[in-house]
Length: 439
Image 1 (cartoon, rainbow, N blue to C red):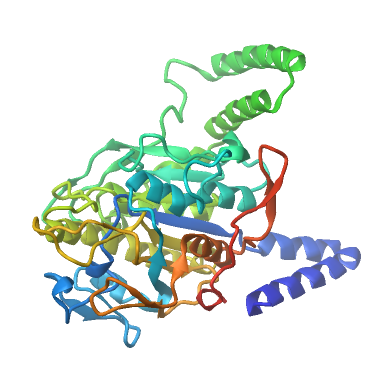
Image 2: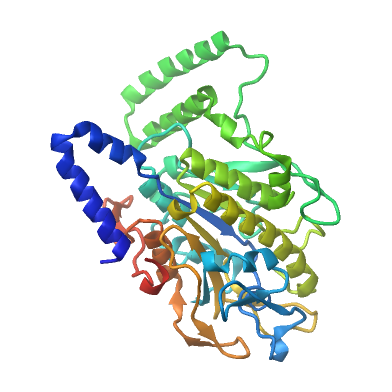
């Protein structure tokens, strides 16, 4: 048994024993336990591992970038990740993720579900599974939120599958684009919003209540005549929206009260502001938040860098560096990093070999992912690729193992089961986690 799991079990057992004698003390202990959360930084398009976290400076495949030292001996990053290099002691770099899915949609499906496309049952995305496990009870805030998803990989986002609409993410869209200056930390920050989160200005409280009373009368009668889970879920979605709109907790989505200097440290683009919003959301009790970085705020570059890879990756790395590093600092400074797992990944990597268009193509054979916070065994680089980056030398990590490790680092047992739509128990992730990556 892992050390932290042993401690959790011991504390829980002790609290249970105390509860019969000292109910008030047991309640206090329970309420003081910080709720677990996960933030997924989704690099849509497939980032180049060779130009970020698995540099090959001594080989012709290494490309144009130099590598820099981090605060962990022997671990080196790209020169365009200087802020993250100062926080390498908070990271676990996994350099040997591997799959056979080199298509964007199929690769994203595998990375987000642990399963190949085409099965008879649609599995829920990892974010939905974590939301289900970490926020099982109905709460005013949604269990999971998606920020900045742009449909680059697939027109049909991977949903909650058999877990139902309760665990479909609430989408936060870009209401106003950033107007960056010469640097990602200067200019006007992007504006993020949730559609229809506030009632229209022409609808006062009395009219608002009458509308819901009318809706309630129709809904109750219809559901009484046609009881089924689909209709109950539909009703629950409306009730959740009503409760959020009237609770005052919707203010968590408003970044305007954050210090201007902090907003700029995160980066003024959608990704940087999304990372700041993610911190606010997990602090407020949201179980899982996904923030997408697909295109650069400066220049519109994409991680899908088949041509002109180096300027694209440089621009995107600047955004990733500002947002990710400031998120780590902010979570740590507020005492949230130990209870929040942060994951950075894309659907695959890029070819170590540079093509004729100065680009890198799709490469699922060996690519990188990053873990931080939670129960992650931080301050390490796990796995090794060959000098040319084309092969895994040791410690390959399959995608199901990777997802199982994310679960374990977030305090969720991947072997726990949920019921699928056929009424059959299935594990959260059908794989064992990598024990060297969590404590």
